[in-house]
Length: 207
Length: 207
Image (tube, rainbow over all chains, first blue to last red; front, top):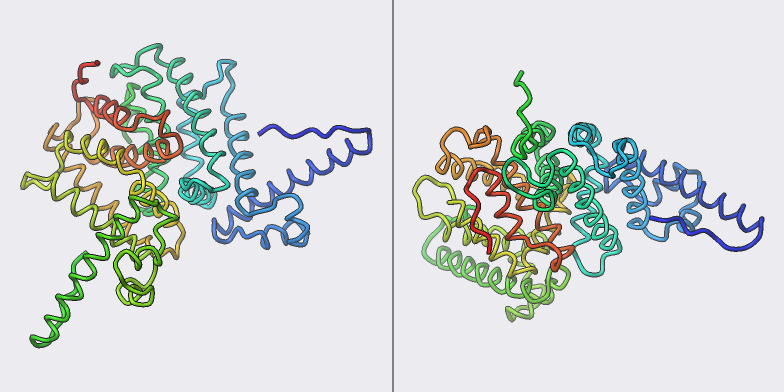
């Protein structure tokens, strides 16, 4: 999301910059709390305590738990795509996507928060609905660009990148639910690599 | 879920049978309310009114909203798989699965309820967690049986039925979230048919 820049003179700009720094620190701390305690444990009170604010003080920056969690997930997206997008074409290479799934399998608290909030957001009036709707649009476009970079206008199985992109996104989201329900029984990174095989990459050697 | 049969004489059995009938009627009515009003609108109060019970009377059968919704989703599963499983082998033919996705695209309230409850259930202590964990195990096994019936021990792309089954389930669940967030922009049945193409079926002719 674009940061809102504040109009006004030097003082206001400095106050704005300090406010943005403070927001960014709260988001980093919230991510720590989520990683340690999961979705339910990431209360506004727990985050406020970690940042050294009163809960009232935290509400000044994030009026609801949902607003804070959306900021955390947005930050995670920017971090993940920033580190995984070395090309100017705008897409993520599929290998880096596989690494991202491996990385996600090491941070269940964050995946749980994403999945729980995505579930809640399907109702019309949920505060995170717009975030996920826009995120899906953006991520599908990025995935289509990745697939086009890798395979051209047709994948080996005959689909266009635009047909395959929603499936790539669906598999990532859907596997997370299965893995969260059965972390021992579901090997999320291996399942994702199987999907890349289906998309037309040669299968990795089996160990 | 197995119905608990009650031990005892004729009176108790009749009372038990009447209780089960009443429960079944509540579940049918709840499904109607869900179809009309979606997840948030399907309150215990709204369902009680539809059935002609007080909310207190409804709580006798279903102590929480989650318990009622789990019963509804379980009933839906039995109905869907009952009508879509003509073979003794236990799997759903893939064509019937595609029809099921088309049918789901006509009942957003039910899909929304499934998706919202699945999202909530990723936390450790959620009352629907066990339902979804068991459901995933069962559905993955059914999908693997379907894929084996269709393709044998290897799919055209090289995956085993057990490798492809979690992907089939993930695509169904994941596409529902994308569709709920953008029903005009995401053609869920077409996307699912694209996935069946990926799995190795010949593509349907394009109109």
